Image: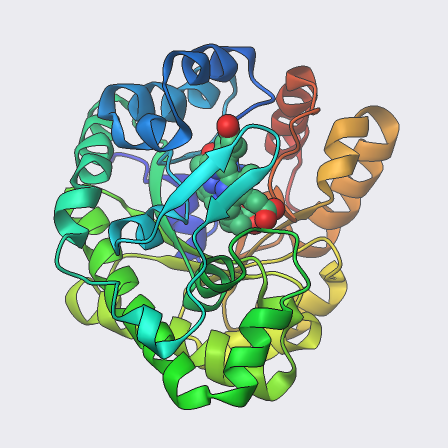
Length: 346
Ligand code: 1CP
């Protein structure tokens, strides 16, 4: 009998001989071969929308390391771009968007060209599936409405969220229109990714931890749960992982209400709490501090062993608590894969 893919098995609550591992942002600037391809593309968006290049950078970490999943190379901000907003990526500065600040400006956005603009991502997904080793699963992904809306309204990362929160508090009815547009766009985009060959989906809510409990429920958890429902209505067997970064004890609300198969944990979540509270309901993924991976050696080994000791019994997929940092030595990634795969369940 053919062995299944370990990440899919773990998200389906099956036990696997080894703990599976992949890393958020595993393709990227810490790899010299990524920087070489990046230099060939005129812009970051061109890299995302040229299937040949997107396929190449998706496969780079898979060739180098014994990872159990690939994630299609793209960005969460391709969705606002496809809705008609101006999105640029400045070297060293991160994303810059022409901000949307009112209900009137929302009228400049439309779902009309979404499928056409994002078609190259589907083409790249289909091509990656043909190239992956048999045991390696392919993740599709998108940003959650709250995180994507934050960039759309603030115009860049690293802000204090005053503008986007101000809109949500002052005029919740019109802010809801933006969130609903993103639920529609993201639901359709993720369905298209599954139809192209994505086997698992991850929804990144990197800024969920900025919200009060009531705002989290309304602007982050419920819109994400609605996207999960729409994907599951058509493809009930596709596992979905949600990453509500920084929500603390509210991870338990996600486990109860979101309808997802897995929760990706940031590095502040205590593994013993996650084992007692989350794992009985959902698979968990995480949660090594990306700076422990930068450091490597005994400090990394200690953290990894602690996480595996609490969560490794499953259902569990090893990952970082946030994306891999550009200064990460690639040989530390190789050492991490070996540590995780060699760990034995007790
Ligand atoms: O020039 C470059 O190489 C720019 C760096 C870069 C890369 C490699 C950006 C700009 N995006 C990406 C790829 C990317 N982004 C992936 C690729 C697949 C993989 O994991 O290998 C993924 C999954 C993302 C997702 C993403 N983009 C998130 C969610 C996850 C997270 O890290 O919190 C967010 C918040 C973004 C926005 C974004 N795009 C790029 C940057 C530098 C940022 C973050 C800006 C900020 O911190 O506010």
